[in-house]
Length: 100
Image 1 (tube, rainbow, N blue to C red):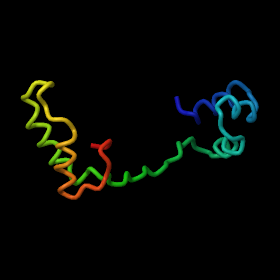
Image 2 (image 1 turned 90 degrees about the vertical axis):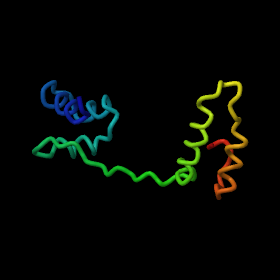
Image 3 (image 1 turned 180 degrees about the horizontal axis):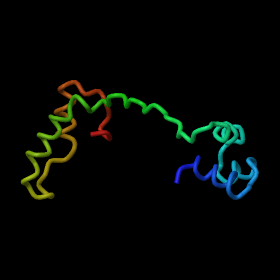
Image 4 (image 1 turned 45 degrees about the vertical axis):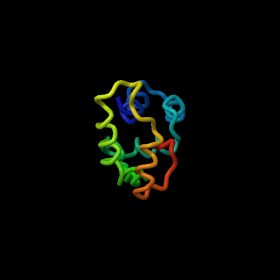
């Protein structure tokens, strides 16, 4: 159940004060009052943030190929991260080894 539904239920049905309802729901009294004053119950819409492209995004295909090439080998005989890191470093990767 959404916060606004809980707020309306507490204040309108259970006759809890706005201050107490806001305290129980961990929201500001001003926010609670603002939502109770609205004639319709509408959840606020927040824009989703665009995730910035990561440093590895241009090299993901190369990394997939390297992992696929090692997938048939046993775990003991697979390459370590160093050769993979060096190969994408030669392609222009400027990040650290931990992200790879």
